[in-house]
Length: 274
Image (cartoon, rainbow, N blue to C red; front, top):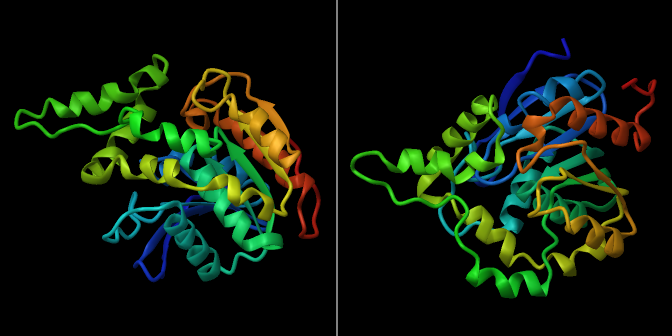
């Protein structure tokens, strides 16, 4: 059934890569933000899976995927995505990335060319020379120092509490679980973003691109105009939401993904209805 989540592991040079999937047909690979896991798409996956084979992986170093030693980089994250796509026989496939996942998706799309049928960048940072230069002064996003009395657990919660509305505590719990899983390296994904030379890679993207963002996500909203200028791509602002938009508006997010994929599908079959 499309709404049944199937879990699995795929081999890579880093070790086992964990993923979850729903549905069948034309594949759509979804990449999460830092320091999350596939559970960021827990409510989106079965909705996209009604029309397509929706796959959400745990990025190398996060969730239940292998956690190799050495510094993380966007290029290494992309290596993991490419390894999973090869292991699952995804050729071609559609690519969706949220925040850090969007930056990783840029690198994957730049590498794989026409193998990526379409690219959807959700709340993705536009990393140019100015952003890289400002990175050293940027305060940490998720880092906390462990305390013997456990008070750092509340600090982890409060790091992102302002992004969630009352009643969205279940989603915030999922963030806390993911952050605690990689607490000793929780900031490295953000650091990798700000080192990435995105502006040198955009010209290599051949897939059609849609850039979307939640209206309250002031960290990423201004990037829509920059992607439009650099790629000539379409943009869309969601009806609401903040940094965790896929969890706050799973139905709308899934509808946007499904409609975009339907426009650029390569496999035969009827177009899904929204």
